[in-house]
Length: 157
Image (cartoon, rainbow, N blue to C red; front, side):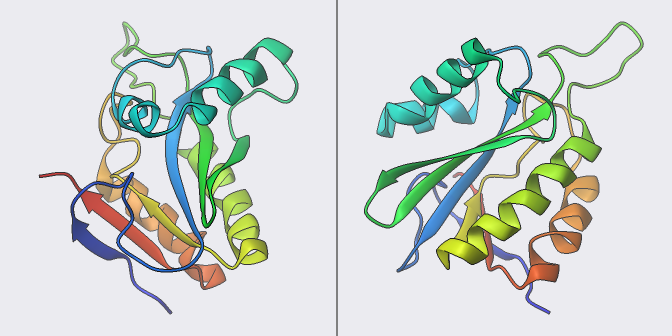
């Protein structure tokens, strides 16, 4: 089975040839404006516009759903709804929803295979969503890697 490739650098600027999908986690309340999405918006306008459109339409806009937007010749961005709201609850529950992330990555695996694409990402869910990488990593193994999709995780320097 493949392993996760860890790289230093910017996940919005993938360091490989061929088809690639840059994936990241979005919330389920239509908010876009903090964290990794800012780097995406700086590079391409479509992912934010399509996310906002999707939220407005309400069509299958819920935890565990994904949206894939072509932004360049060999590059797509995948908006994954894996975060409930944007703040930690009074009970100390972080916005991340691991089951939703798993559903998203399972769907993404099939799209990646159809597009013959590799998947690139920051350490998804570990910033504003409040998730832990030791929870996310096994989910990536169970979904993307199990389907033989190459995965690149970027640590921004």
